[in-house]
Image (cartoon, rainbow, N blue to C red):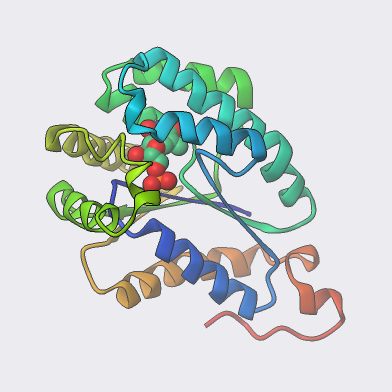
Length: 231
Ligand code: TMP
């Protein structure tokens, strides 16, 4: 199963992907945690270019193509092989981020982004997408607190430097996508205590995973033990 997390800056994705991974691994699922941009050696180099605040001059089209290049490499080298091994792949951002950040917020055509995705990925889409939703003001405040905490974060601040209005468009773009694809998206209120956010994510993911539980997903199943149902 392929699970993606999306949301604006400061929505808490990094914390929540780890919480979900830890929950699933305790229940015997073999997980592969990954992220975009990044997730491969080539992708981490592309990530540095994309997020470096010194690269303010990248054109919106070049930016989009770099994200797509990163994605093709990531799907080929990491995501498809992990799914083929029966792992649950949990990815911090995926194609929806390009539709929303480049297609909607940067003002490139969202249709163009969809077309490019179809060209390079075919019909490959996540099984579940968790959208961590919160007001842009709150997310940006949290993101700037994190950036203030160290040089590594400051080196990746190109998007945080965008105006509040840009992040409002991103939020709205995600909510519109979620309305269009209610079967794939789960919208979670990320403005609350992180433990409550985790509980909602688990409540959404666990039954769907349990319904598709396969021997390859689950380490202790493979070893011949019974696995407790997800709680
Ligand atoms: P993050 O790792 O903190 O989520 O940062 C990644 C940044 O890249 C974030 O600002 C969103 C942006 N992004 C896009 O603009 N388009 C994309 O396709 C992806 C994956 C990320």
